[in-house]
Image (cartoon, rainbow, N blue to C red; front, side):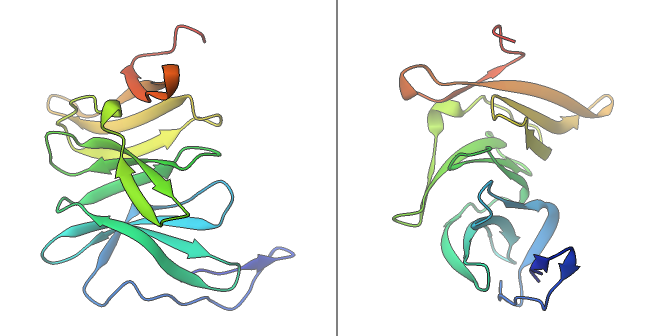
Length: 168
């Protein structure tokens, strides 16, 4: 359910159907900065899907999506951007960046941002300006590990680079 908030009070729920056989993990739901799009990782019995919903303030409707066939563990919109970081359960690329085009309601993977991360990603979080991305992943010896990537965009090529930005 989505609940509008006015003057600090919850309003009536806004209902949207995700389907009866779909599951959503707690970290797999995230609003964009403008609050008009919601990204949700839906787990289905046979596959998984990254779905974008449009929100008008009173109505939540499906706007776009992509079948991934891998469990979506976590999603996070880059602040003030159409880019979305996605953490997956098991894959040769468990950290992916997608671009959402609101005009065509389409998601496109930014393959130049692939970093070869093959560990299960449990959490992704951008810093307030969208230059750094914190990733919580499986680490065999200690359970979990945080890794920070900075977003490098020379000539609009969009790369994630392991470590801290030399500019910080």
